[in-house]
Image (cartoon, rainbow, N blue to C red; front, side):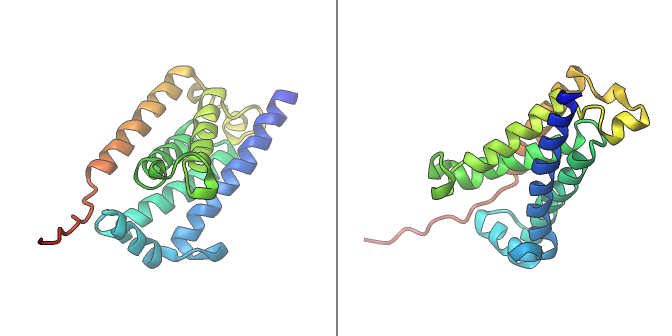
Length: 171
């Protein structure tokens, strides 16, 4: 039972934090910029149309976080969150080093690791999946498949990116 309480604690804290980040992007809650502001940021990163990518990222964080909190849908929440965090790591944070204080990879890496760790650990007995008897989703094979889908989805998303070319000054 202590294991399940530990998994529940991780699910609730990590899932709620992720859902909050998604709510910032989608709805402008908690000091966020909403779809329009986040879309402008995404456009600056080379994701066009920015509002589409902002909606996808915000939706993945919001709904993925909620699925994690509830322990619902097996590794689906982890896949949504993990793919989004991998894109954030590669396109925004990697160039800034490790620590969050310099906008490095620290925080999105922790979120991705927690999400993927929960995919492998399963939601525990204090989850909606367990209450509904959906234990077939709680397997290493499903978790590995989810991890692979998250990586492929993240790389596909990055492949769609079209950063602005830097103009070169004539000498």
